[in-house]
Length: 577
Image (tube, rainbow, N blue to C red):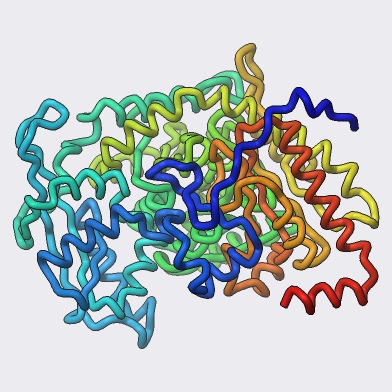
């Protein structure tokens, strides 16, 4: 392949290690340019820790949130205390219960007397958003600083903590902080006075409903999705958490996870629920086993409340036979919950198979990697719709901060345009790289992408119809698997793109997935088909030819490393150490 370098727009410069990606205040990713940077971040190496100024907000608490926590500690506690703030009392109460639960933590559960719940009110003296005297009530869990692990785990797992924008907003008025613990009104922060009060929330829900009804895979819908069927949350994990809470209140029985999902989805269902049966490969054989499992549970008089799956899965981009899953679920009156974050509203239509959709709006829906949010969509054609709708209408609280909703609404206006480019770029890269890795000399052993998956017909069965203004595609995520971890690290270190967690950013992000997500469970991940040597790539908006050149260069370096004589390779390893 001959590439005219003069016509290529160069890739954007990457920042220094530990700096935000993108280079904005509320960025949700961080640059970690080498394999060792990733590994040492998790071991707490001073070299990395001292330079890391930000990270994915559920795992690495944003500087504005840290500052607000500090203000509350200084005013209401002492230096040996820490706190975690939430937008509703219910979240704070659940965090308290999580940290003190012996069922979850066994002997590591915190004594109740070690924790305290506080409600903090912030008063805005000037007129904001046309309303004088606005106020926010936040709710915090306070504990000794050296006992904060369980609270941080809840923050990361449930995704219910306050956002960096909310913290930034409050810190500007820190002088008005007052302790209102014990007041009878334990509502979420008061500037969101209901589901539809703020225009950005209305616009987002309507936009999602419109996208879901745009070019469906089937020509007609018996029951179209309405704006009121869309529920917003402050993160994607918060949406998954609330979906599980809804199911537990509805039936309270076991669940199934079919296919390898985002790691915290499985962890959350295992933590909050009676039992989970996991079918990691999502194959036709696993479908036979799923059928047997549901039949066995039914014969024993036990129901299975839901089958959870993704379209496609993260990070191996596989799509199960969702129509067969739907058929199996119908026989046992089991709900089907699908996370369509990777496929996206523009590419896939899952309302023919799913009773409920969950989505991380942080990713491609936003496309700017500068705001966190999630959503639940109820399928009005589902047999379970009436029960679920009644539950959510009674219990739902809008905790997506208005400024976050406004940013997300602005970001998502060009979703279809961005999706078109990213679909095209990802497919171009995959098809261009395939010939380079299809021989014994290549350091790469496998390439994962929905378009080239052996069971690609399962994904295509869920694709939307093509229209004049948009043609659905296969998404912006692909994964490379290398022969060894060493070769993967050589490739990763040589790849001249942004590198860090998350996906759906405006820039391409590479991530050694197992190293970052399963650094303590590598053997288990390998048993489930996720090799330690995989590198996941989230395609951005850069010039596709410049990206291909960067990938070709990095692959050539990895291939050269593989071709070295064994004694030379060993010598290099010894020198590196």
